[in-house]
Image (tube, rainbow, N blue to C red; front, top):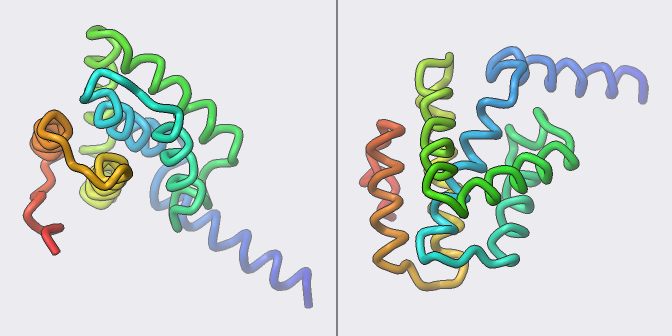
Amino acid sequence: MFGALKRAMGAGAREVKAEYGENKDFLEAVCAAAALVAAADGDIEESERRKVVSIVQNHPTLSKLYQSNIIEQTADTMFKRAKETSGRQLLARELDDIKSRPNGSQMAEDAYLIALDIANADGDLEPAEQEVLKKLAARLGVDASKFDF
């Protein structure tokens, strides 16, 4: 019985991988969007880093695709890039990698929503964060008004 359950769960993970791709583009885009928002005020807090890792590890799709250590490493890389202007441009380019993929619009929405979660993590959506969210929505082709509820 446990063998059948394990095989069924493994099949579900394979279906998700096939649907969202075998590479890290989705994870990188999500972490890049979150890092851009976290860096909006000029100061990336450790609590923001932890929040990103926690959200991704508990995300219904991302958690099936990537192991915890890969999530943590990818988030760390993206947060390091967010400290410099050239690094932030690299982060913006990570967003482009998912737009043309199968399910790219769903990936883009997920990346935007996780960035929105990070912006709202401290309970105060600052003007600099709002500006970055607008840029993210535009770059990702996401209609942010869909999430005003």
